[in-house]
Amino acid sequence: MNLLRKMLFPFAVLYGLITSIRNFLFDKGILKSYAFDLPVIAVGNLSVGGTGKTPQIEYLIRLLSDKYKVATLSRGYKRQSEGFILADASSNALILGDEPFQYFQKFPNIKVAVDANRKNGIEQLLAQTDKPEVILLDDAFQHRKVKAGFYILLTSYGDLFSDDFMLPTGNLRESRSGAERAKVIIVTKCPSDLSVDAQNRIKSELKINKNQELYFTTIEYDELIYSEGKTLKVSDIEAADKLLLAGIAKPEPFFDYLKAEKEDCLTFPDHHNFTDKDILEIKNKSLNKIIITTEKDYVRLKGSVPSDQLFYLPIKSKFLRGDEEFRKTITNYVGTSTRNR
Image (cartoon, rainbow, N blue to C red; front, side):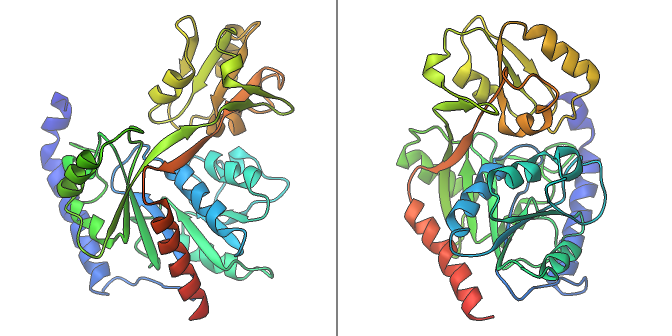
């Protein structure tokens, strides 16, 4: 923790007090929470920064969309639009935000919407002629105005919320007690060989209660990279000249997976909107090279960089164990909620 953050400790205490009062008012019903007559699953975290929400939302889409009409609702972070927007053929990453646009492109059989006001967003989705049967709220753990039926809390391995502190001294958006709202807690970005003993130690540190389920996941990288009209095996491009590019919160694992010693790497802030200057830099550094980026960056770069150069590497969330138990928990909640409507 740097000196400036330590100096801001009084503000962290004040911020923690304000968020605790807010949560208390919602818990006691003094501030109104709105529930809806369909399964609503909220995925989020206690901290700022990347904890793997996007691959977890995609996991849920794959799990549920064959049987139910699924919609995702995000705020559309850094989008250049306002209010409720339902994705359609005219949408792009600037209108929706990069992650919602990624969902829209990958899963054409679901509805993708954005609205900073999640209550209004749900109401607008339910007003559609072909309304959804399940709604996935992306990054909505602190959005208390909507009372989701099921909360999934993510926390990163090596950066557990139990070891963190309130903003601005730490990275927590609310106190650790907020974790009590979660039915499921997932420790993301774990080493693939994380031992059962290590998992049990983390369970003890997080103070999981008897009504909560705890799972551990790792990031699984695809064996292929994809462009607009071509796929290549990662193993076949190890010796190729390439530029690696990422605008995500923690890009090091992405670079480590692809990087050979001679490769150039370009790093941009999370959710970065690429400027003309950025595009020129990318083009200059990628002469006679292929460009490999994250899926989230790809949807923002597509159309600005030659399509025959630009590739992306997909990722998935993979459970270290308990995959079937997690799937059963989710499908039981959705099935029961749907039957009880």
